[in-house]
Amino acid sequence: MDYFPLFADLTDRPCLVVGGGRVASRKVRQLLRAGARITVNASSLDPVLLDMANTGKITATVGEFKPELVIDHLLIVAATSDATVNQAVAAAAAANFRLCNVVDDCEHSSFIVPAIVDREPLTVAISSGGRSPVLTTVIRQKIEGLLPARLGAVARWAEAWRDAVRARFPDLRARRHFWQTELDGAASDLILGGRTAEANRAIVRALAADPARSDRGPGIAYLVGAGPGDPGLITLAGWRLLQQADVVVHDRLVSPALLDLARRDAELITVGKTPSTASISQDEINKLLVQLVEQGNRVCRLKGGDPFVFGRGSEEAEALAAAGMPYQIVPGITAAVGCAAYAGIPLTRRGLAKAVVLITAESATGESEPDWANLAAGEHTLAIYMGVGKLNAVSRQIIAAGRSPDCPTALIENGTTDRQRIVRGTLKELPGLAKKHAVTAPALLLVGQTIALADELAWFTAPPLGTGWPSNSGVAESGKTIWTEPSDLNPGAQT
Ligand code: SAH
Image (tube, rainbow, N blue to C red; front, side, top):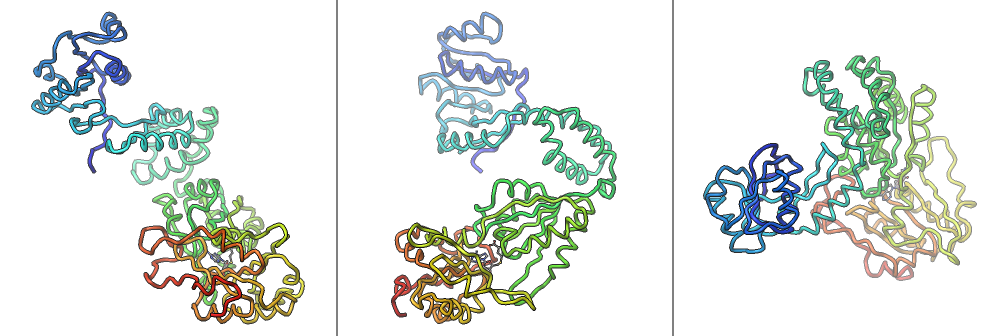
């Protein structure tokens, strides 16, 4: 860390500003806002500073800078237009162990002033250590947009309840948990909406409730689609709810980078299922969700892709509804949509594909196979989920339904992640290619004429492994990534 960030209380503390022009008066105004007691030293003062001096807001010492001026001042700002004078100020400050900022001159400064996002009393300070003031500004603008204008009111409201909450929860951990729940959710929304009386009633209720939360009433479940792998593909709504959750119940495929967004004290429960092993049954997951919500938790059920596309989100929502538990459903980007985009394959295209059909090759025990004859016939794009283990049968059925054996296909493994691999070929060569490249789940099969467009439209190259970009399924083995072979790029080519 080049600079130690700190917030200093300057109320009534002596600060020296050297310089009498526009820059100096800007610095004086900033320091005055913090309540500092300011002396300005300059050979002459501009009208603004002169007025401040005449009205007693600052003390003026008109004349040349002398090193002894820095004594008895906590902070010094050198803001003259003369670099030699500024450096003399910095040297005098250093000799007297005072902190000094030379405006726009990091090299001679012993402190720098960050850019701020001001939500008084909440302040966000941003610094690039003097390396890129423009980057600092860009980031400041982003944070400005992120923080509601009335956030300061939330901080003041929290301050007003601080003693009461401290008395109720002497234990720091319990107190933090209480505040996180209040400030992350409904109470803070009420304050932001100007409904202070309601927020007060809500916190009184929450303070009276059992901290074990048994009498807080049911919590809520959020069935959130996490997207297919790239953590950036979660929706803003899903992201916000994930950050609020007390418990996160997630699929095995959900990116660790997304789980990092959960609260530090949130409980994470993996309910991973693989095609071959069902470590926890769907029925057990349903029961777990109901139970967690009943206990008063805000539960984020984070599911790969979209909860309602082959995600068994329906069964979970049905279980919650049957038990009378509240829930919300947040859609996600389903694998077909995500993988197609990251492979540069449009799912529909005028003249090539007027429709797209999402099919699962997997069928529950006792359930009939997909109606391939109806689903596969025609010109539309097929997106087949959970089909890696059955590629021989799938390709045979699609050909039997009337598609040409030369119809282009793309098998996308770990789509949208740093481990994305794409194997392309025709329907008839697909099973052989998949075997050759040892494609494993999760992989999505696309079938249709639009696949050829990837030659022009492919844009995403997974970064080299180990560059820190999050993988969606644990540690990637360097060197194991197999890219589409040049011959595979031509759908008609033999490999
Ligand atoms: N609800 C999920 C689908 C769950 S079924 C969704 O909407 O996407 C699991 C299947 O989805 C996998 O077998 C695979 O076919 C597909 N899938 C999910 N993530 C994938 C990914 N990153 N790349 C390729 N296929 C994926």
